[in-house]
Image 1 (cartoon, rainbow, N blue to C red):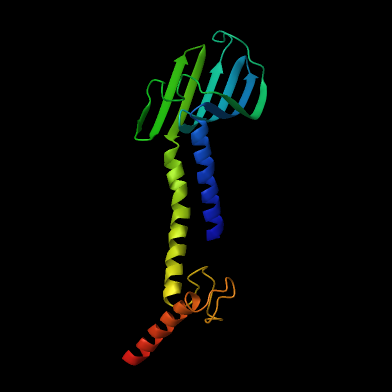
Image 2 (cartoon, helix red, strand yellow):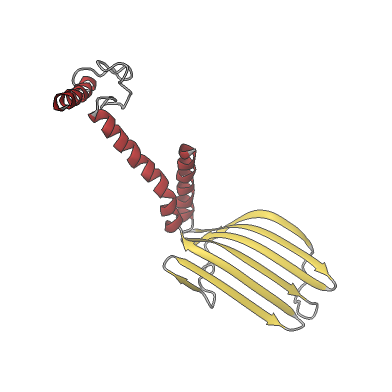
Length: 204
């Protein structure tokens, strides 16, 4: 389970870094739209995932419009999920909007516009710099690599693994069956382990 989590974390880190590089020149968006009409009022809901301007984020927009407030009619229906790629726009997503708040790499915005009897629009969005999720995803693989190196060093010092390839030498301490190392490499680890055991017996 831990290995699977490490692999997933590593793949997520790689995907985030790839989006980070693409965001320098491209605007990637995953969209989900739905529009329906009821009682002469048009309702809209839009979910957007964006990667652009070295930032990634999610936005939610909902609105209702009466015929008096509608400039153009939109066909009702479920737009489904789709992906869109464009050249990087001049406007930074959710950064150039008014009322943007945040700290450090995190930014969020909440906007509400109400025109009585005409329409009402609400927008909620949050975005982060790509490096933040990339760094968080990299913690798991880095910790696993450090733990593997530490366990290998402990095994070599105890004569349990080959210093050349890391193969388990508990069954064949004289020669490594994996890489063939003997005497100077594999046996040296075994000798260190034996010396440690002899020293422990003397002190006891």
